[in-house]
Length: 255
Image 1 (cartoon, rainbow, N blue to C red):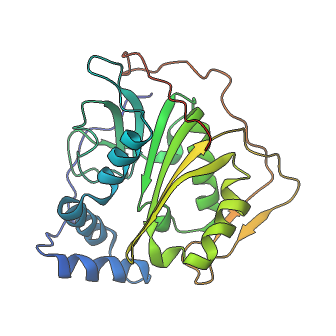
Image 2 (cartoon, helix red, strand yellow):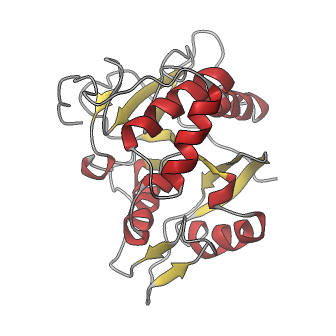
Image 3 (spheres, rainbow, N blue to C red):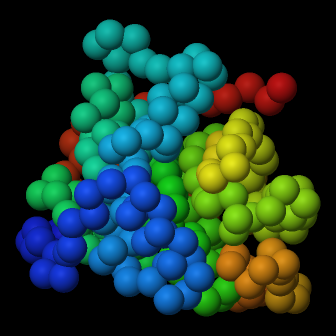
């Protein structure tokens, strides 16, 4: 992986000190009138308070029997949009954590769209990120890249605000978008605030003959897939700079 930029603290960062302020900041951002720095600060506070994503990841990995035994190789993981070190601190994960505006020296300041997809990761975590991508086309590109970053049988942990993907639209999202990208659902969890899904990469993305569009019904998470051709990497086991440890390939049996 190319060398990342040096850590630079957010100049416009404004501390948010309680959950009420954090909820307000996230609602304003999802409504189109919020500030990205305030949203990032709110996300950091809420994840520190509730640990929603890390708990979902740890619980799912454990329940699927994928947690390495003592002394075993850690699971290679890419965390996109990281706002804390909860996954980085896990002893059974080998995490590359990135964000557009890093707030911690262990989180690389990188644009996900610029990271070469070499199919080296066994897990990818995309939590509260897709809803921040401004266009339907770029959201489709992001999900496509997620598949290309993963090894076959790799897991995508996808977390989104519940309001961005209403219950009546989730099955359509899975069949119209995620299935075409080669994913199938392994685990789903929903709360009034957050919808979490663990997808498994079971096949290469389908070649598209026409543009595929998904409308969420509220213009918060519209997605477009273009038939420009998507291929998974030819060098699945190739490593990258800064990742000398042996990677653990995980396999989940279909239920």
